[in-house]
Length: 188
Image (cartoon, rainbow, N blue to C red; front, top):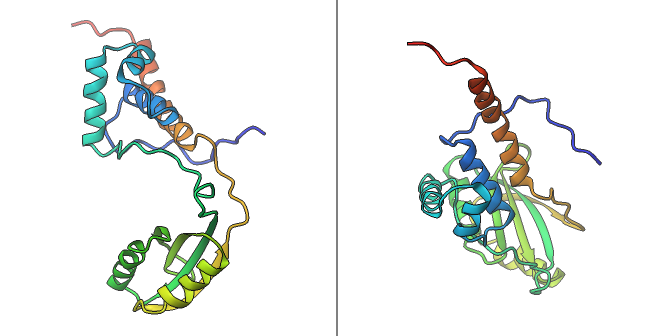
């Protein structure tokens, strides 16, 4: 099924990136183990130039790291659970989020808008593990007023989401570059 483009306009990138940076990022998103030599061949630049650009992208915080994607189910943690938590307002939410992140079951915590304040993604081994989380680990935390739990039955992920997003960011840069190349050189 073909993807529809969003009705929203193409966003301007926040970091000062050019088309070459975005091509490097697209290659790394596809295969983060790609050597700088192979990346240089793919992009058509020298290896030192690629190395400098990657270092700059890391320094800017655009590249935050390189990680292996694990099958957590194969490691014995197959169950994803989302827990909405209604909390005290204000700084208590950040404190509670930090306390939750210290628990090995907690994969992420998002501060959200709506009927709950925090959305927590957990990974547990089984229902007994989930029961222990709710009855032994969560109650001692200060500031939890109410919880809503949602057990994931199946996860559907957008394949290559980051690569598609990079392409969306790259489009305006490519159009700008094309317009510049079409304009006749000014006479001095």
